[in-house]
Length: 265
Ligand SMILES: Nc1ncnc2c1ncn2[C@@H]1O[C@H](COP(=O)(O)OP(=O)(O)OP(=O)(O)O)[C@@H](O)[C@H]1O
Ligand SMILES: [Mg+2]
Image 1 (cartoon, rainbow, N blue to C red):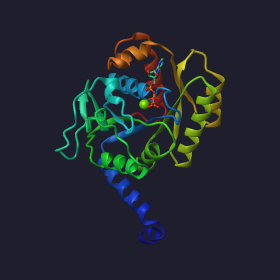
Image 2: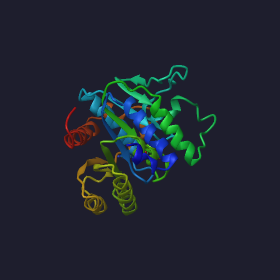
Image 3: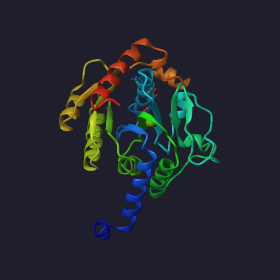
C-alpha cells in the first residue's frame, strides 16, 4: 500500500484520505444517488426533492443533500427556513416530513451575501460539508448536483462512493447533447449511470432522449410530464407529489424503477 502511494501526487493523497474519512461518516447510508445534468434548469432539484418524498412515502429512510453550493435551491423548494446549528459538530441535518435535509443555505444566509467560491474552495467546501455532517442511518441519500462538469459535480463524484447518477434530460436536442456529456463524464470517473429520466416530457419519449439512453448504454427510468403546477408548488415550498395525484403517480413509477436498478436496502 505504502509503495503504491509513493507515486501519487500529494494533493491527490489528500483527496484519497478525505474520501476514506467521508466513507466512514456515511457508513450508515445504504444507497447514494446523484441527480445530475450538465445543463442548467432541466429540473434536477425538482426531481431530487419529489423523488426523495416519494421514497420516504414508500417507507424508506431518506436524506437529501443540496450539493449546489453556488445556487442552493433546496430550502426554497421545500419551504425550510430553519438553519443548521454550526456550534455542534458533526452538523445535524434538518428533519422535515421525516426526511433529513442539508444545504449550505442552512449554514449561511446567502441572499444577504451571495456565495462566490473559486474552484478549489468549492471542492474544499463540499468535502468539509460531507466530512462534518452526520446523516445517521439512511436507506437513500439523494444528492442534488449543480449543473456544469466542473468543480462541484466533479468533487461529489470523486469524494462519494455513489451507487450512481440519475441523468435528467428534457425533450430538446441541446439537453440531450449535454446529458450525453454528463453521462460520459460520470463514466470516466467510474460512476455508474443508473438511468435517464425525461423531465418536462410530452408523454412520448423524444428522439433526443432515446439517443441519450443509447449513447450511454443505459435505461430509461421514466418520464415526468411538463406541468405548470411544478412552478406554483415549488414557489410555495411544497413538493408537488404531496399535492397532486397525477404527479405523485408519475414519481411512484420512477422511484419503483430506480429502486429496482439495484438491490433493495
Ligand atoms: N416537469 C416540469 N414541468 C414544468 N416545469 C418544471 C418541471 N420540472 C421542473 N420545472 C420548473 O423548471 C424550473 C427549473 O427547475 P429546477 O430548478 O428543478 O432545475 P435545475 O436543473 O435544478 O436547475 P439548476 O441547473 O439551476 O440547478 C423550475 O421553475 C421548475 O419549477
Ligand atoms: Mg437545481
